[in-house]
Image (cartoon, rainbow, N blue to C red; front, side, top):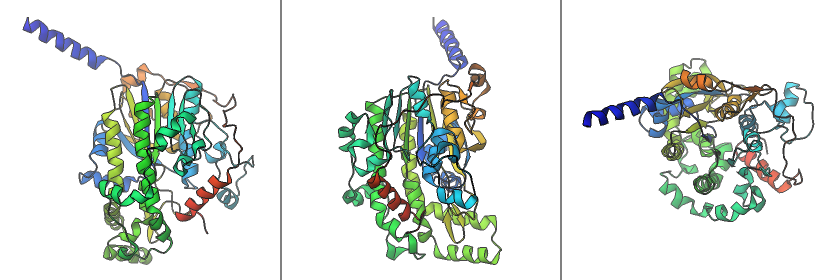
Length: 432
């Protein structure tokens, strides 16, 4: 009897292993500014266990970014799989400097995001805090918490019925000290800066707001994930990026001065930059640890039928005496991409990926065709051969044959626009 039972268990185990992988759900976690040259040394030191787990059991690689390296443009390209000139969220200063021709004058998004495409096809979606998502589009299947939710606007979410519950989850900037201690963040003070702050002074002053925004959105994401289950869930966090914008000013001064001197003398070697990267990673470690804890929660929520996608829009690289990503004199630094879940090859290295590939990958994973007018392609090299054989690639000319839904609200929102401009000035993207 025991032999028969053991044989039955063995047969069932083989059958389970032979069963083709299937993806029923997708989770996308977006972390602005997460950089491979900073993640990799922290992982090597054992500081980011969740990221290490994804790298070992899933697929990992660098995600190519592009100019102009500004988050609103980049995250819209991640969401649509299309270039700036196609999706319409344009840096007009860059366009004019480059002499580019733009076939339109409006400043609104002109194409559909992956969550709109999915929702049109009765696949439920939930999207939280995405750039340029206000006013929220009324999705027929799902919800959206736009980037204006941070500013306590009741009209920032769809459907409106979810606003009261998530509004109650806010963490006020006045609770910054208590919350940053709970999350293991130090106090970065101007008087402790090793490199004069200059333009970064305002970022440091505004840090409690940025910090409590992300802590609030983490709570909102957890709550909506549990209370409003959807097939494709996407949420975005900004704290790594904001922390990286002032971290140069808290580097080891001796190491920093030596690096700057070598750069100015033309003798800077890759090893010198690697050493400075390790110190920059030390300064930004609390923000990356928050990112890692967030990833760990979603790893624990995987059920064998869910694909986890993690990405960033750009990284940070030393150049010209500081860590940058939007300096037009340097190549845009890579972000990261990680995949974990059904059909993903354990330990696979993703090569040649770009921001445009995220939306096609999600559509492909959900069994939808990839549009020929998208600038990216699904990251199918991260999947094993059996999965690919079972799920052949489908193609369609475009998803833009029908008009995208709009909020029905007026296109101009001066008070929201003013907050965005204030934010961009704080982070040094535009002049005062």
